[in-house]
Image (tube, rainbow over the protein chains, first blue to last red):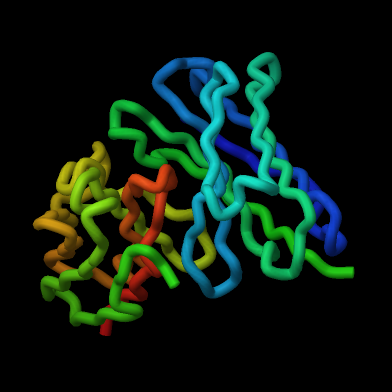
Length: 121
Length: 109
């Protein structure tokens, strides 16, 4: 069974960089059949896609966040990471990592449990 | 303001059929596949529908999707109390981003 687990600080100061890592277990992380994505959800609000990375390292980002986002991958550890710079209170949200599977037309078929990141001084 | 428009709420009684709509544009729903996700309270979203109307294995056939032009719908038949959740549509937008609807909170009365 595929499992994804987010990890990282739950509190980040304004103007600093938010850093999260997603560790994947139980599947073929480096398979060309998957993209690995980050999605966030402010409390009581809807979902927002942040971006994705292919195991080869190619990335695609949400244009609204592109100037502040970096997603990287470490296939040796079955991990991918998110960095979001210059954070403000508007970046406070639950952050999910998720797998996109080509067999389901790149649907998000597995999700992590989510981790709450609060931006506050 | 989401690119995809969903009603904020929907409701039904057990056994009923309910439909949740998702309205977009030619740059998203009009030209790409629609997906649906279910988010039970306090949990991560769960994948329900892909390619407009296909169910992955394990999703009951009570859930069905459809698409016409720049709109899509999720129908839930034989409504159960455990279907009470938030439902999100999603689609790839030609602006090079995955976009989600604002979500619909389904209440089972």
